[in-house]
Image (cartoon, rainbow, N blue to C red):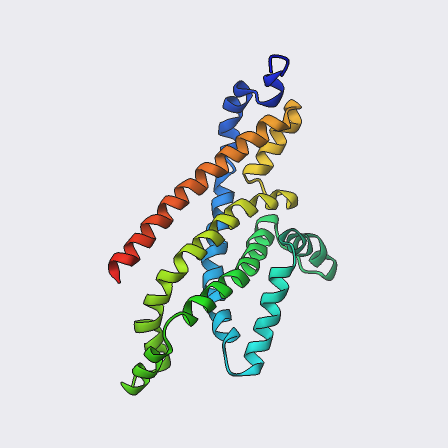
Length: 225
């Protein structure tokens, strides 16, 4: 153990000096993850309704979309949006490509979360609301969604945590988020390992804060119900 040169593994001085610069990319990390999650929730909700629809013209396109997005690596999607589309005359900035890519990808996972949580609500409640003269959307808004949201919070939180970590892949299309900033410093100082450990700690801290929020939401919905 005495022969190990710990300075080659992690340089605390470099980590502390680099921290402000690396953290300057956190705004892009949060922008990509929050906006993509918000838009993904909207798209995913309607995808889940289409996925469970009795109309095949809605169900099968939704099935195909979800299958494709869950089966293709997000990095491939980002490359297609940023590098391939300009060939056919469609250009996005790096940030726009990242937002679109992560949104359409996470929407597929969110759709499956919504589908399972909506299906977990007893079908008798649909029948009872119909007997009371409530419309489909009234039933959804007043009865089904409040119950299904409580069930969906833990898996949706996991989707968001995965999205935060996956946002580091936006560095591959030059988005100046946390990981991209760390790569710059690591290449300049010839010490990428220290910066990788620093980035790991930063992502861990962000995800820990989100976990606290998840626990709060779970308790809040449990108390409400």
